[in-house]
Image 1 (cartoon, rainbow, N blue to C red):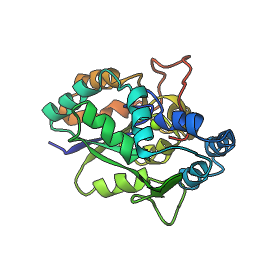
Image 2 (image 1 turned 135 degrees about the horizontal axis):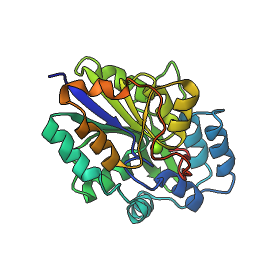
Image 3 (image 1 turned 30 degrees about the vertical axis):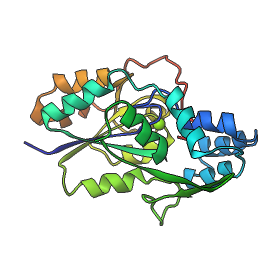
Image 4 (image 1 turned 90 degrees about the vertical axis):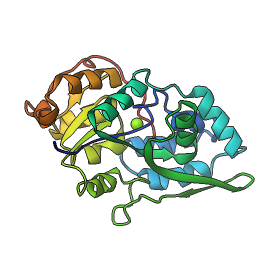
Length: 244
Ligand SMILES: [Mg+2]
């Protein structure tokens, strides 16, 4: 059987709350919304946006960030079962996030899912009121996103025959164009419609599991053969879609 990889975004996708958006609103001066707007309009990428927003933040420590994220974070209720489903089927699973490693690790640990492989931007707090970022998965030739999800996807081509992508936001648009199949909601779904990228709509991981379970294990690629489709999300308003 072909080797299958499910690759998923975190904020707004696995985690139903956008932690990054909340951090800006809680800890940054109001000007952070101008930066967030520039990001949402595609004028700047997250690699520029993060340090600019950090410069507007006061009083944010590592402990604050963790307490804030853990208090707000709610996982998609169907996500743990979906991870088990992937393991039973022999599908590999990994998280690719343009969010921050500190809170993703903490949330996964709390949920007993610390063994999931994930890639994200790195944040540290070298001194009071100074937040430092590192972008270990950036694409130096592009420079737009902190985490280049497309680069991470391309690297997996050597080990996988079929790569399916799950996402909801701006940082998912590029990798979705390089995946073999896309599950999309929110902004990603709108962009897939605009770009002509075939996708299946989903509301949560229970939807995705149902779609995958209904397909012949050896013929997952055929799920997308009909191209664009209207799914359960039609007419619904998507509330996420900020920086992360
Ligand atoms: Mg997202």
